[in-house]
Length: 74
Image 1 (spheres, rainbow, N blue to C red):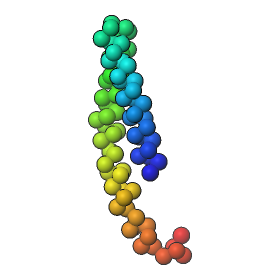
Image 2 (image 1 turned 90 degrees about the horizontal axis):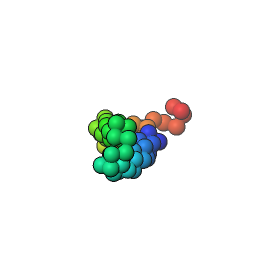
Image 3 (image 1 turned 90 degrees about the vertical axis):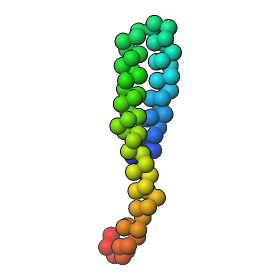
Image 4 (image 1 turned 135 degrees about the vertical axis):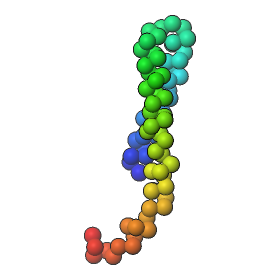
């Protein structure tokens, strides 16, 4: 749960910075740095946020493997 929450919150913050970076780059403000921010947000979306459905599935559907153990197994 914490991994999914952390990835989503970081993605949300990167999306916020992406919007600002696109606006600033369109006004020729520190274009190289803004392009790096845009590329970072894209990388995060394609490589980190792409894992979100799998993390969600392990939370929603993964309880049976834990609850199958007897309490004294812990």
